[in-house]
Amino acid sequence: MLETGGRIAMKRCVGQPGVPPLVISPSFRDKAMTLIKSVRLAAAALVLAAPASAQTLQNAVGNAYYAPAIGNFSTLGNDLFGLLISGRFSDGQTFSANWGSIGSGLSGVDFAGRFRLSIGSTTNTWGNPFTLTVFGAANTLESLTLSGASGPVIFDRTFGNAVGTTQSQLGRDFAFSGMSDAWNTLITYRNAVQMVGSGGPIGDIYETMVVEFRNGLAGTAGGRDVRFTQDFDNIITGGLLLPVPEPSALLLLGTGLTIGFVVLRGRRLSLAPAKE
Image 1 (tube, helix red, strand yellow):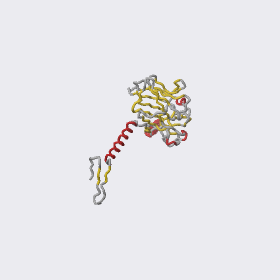
Image 2 (image 1 turned 90 degrees about the vertical axis):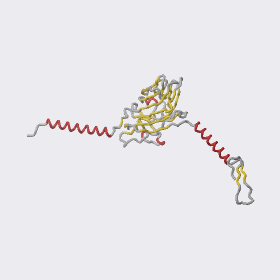
Image 3 (image 1 turned 135 degrees about the vertical axis):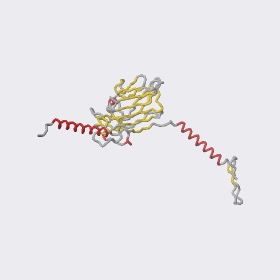
Image 4 (image 1 turned 90 degrees about the horizontal axis):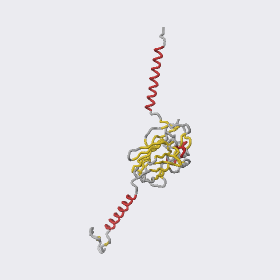
């Protein structure tokens, strides 16, 4: 007999004379239910303690870019001059400026009263953190877009700790420094870069990086600091980052040249003296 509702379960061994009934206390069911409840409570505690989500990195389709050569894969703050930084806030306002000297031994961009992004002018971007400061308790930064073509500089990804594009050497992905991701951040690398004369981009270097704080990065009256690392490379001095022409653009160019040649040839024939 098994009493499922009582605190003592009894099981008689039918057909085995002389075998006394087996008594188990407390019941297996009570033990099992207690264990299940404990596991559920522990799981719930883990879910509550864990962040809503973690930082995510991805590559996105964009416009491929040509680079003539990489001039320096050991890039300092001063080497980022020209890099275009754009910030978007939850109130719809956007701010854009090119990287430059902002004083006190720092290089970067500084939008007084809203945000500042900086690193030491002579600090190597390899492994050393940038500081993003958001000012004002009413300010919530939603995203940053860093565009390298105006530098020209590029973003060099970790790429499985392997050298991708030969001249770029090892890279390093965006990563928060000394803090966890409390903003459900999405980092998107866009516009893959290839060397002139190569068969195409390898996939380790990019022209643009977009940082989206999907939970919003709220400022404080004194300024909230967020630090992160990201490896940069420089394009050779005097070189440019230029978009790779689309196949359709090349086709249109070729068609235009052909039409122009036909028209020019027709005009020449019409002006030529007739044969007698």
